[in-house]
Picture (tube, rainbow, N blue to C red):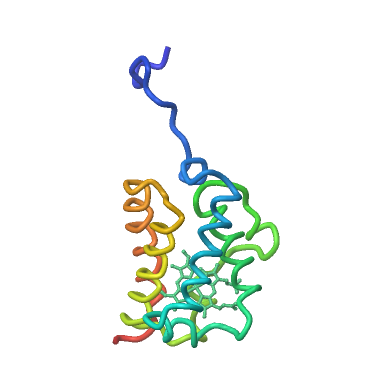
Length: 137
Ligand code: HEM
């Protein structure tokens, strides 16, 4: 018996499993981009993206599956994400970071992710979003 896991403890699961697998990751990504299209508060973020968001939806979905500890769809297709380098063509400051975070937090709430899981993911998303900043303001 593993003496570090008390009897009756829930076995460790990945965030991917806790979100609910591929269908739920896809629902989260779809809501994220729907909100980006709909909400005036995210117009600045939307303006950085292509006219049609279909490619963005697929890429974020593939990426997040792996980022959450699930299947490596993104790296299978494109290799190392090099996420910061891939964002360099876009001017990302505090305003863009905060819009991305607000849009993702609204999407997580609207697809009814467990609030404590959403809070944990928001902290991780923030680290990645902040790392993407490539200008001061
Ligand atoms: C900080 C604010 C952010 C802004 C303003 C931003 C903006 C963008 C834009 C404009 C694109 C190009 C979309 C396209 O080519 O269809 C993009 C691509 C992408 N973003 Fe972000 N992003 C941000 C944060 C993030 C974060 C936090 C993640 C991951 C957790 C992420 C993951 C991705 C991925 C995987 C792609 C596709 C890269 C590729 O293969 O071309 N982004 N982002």
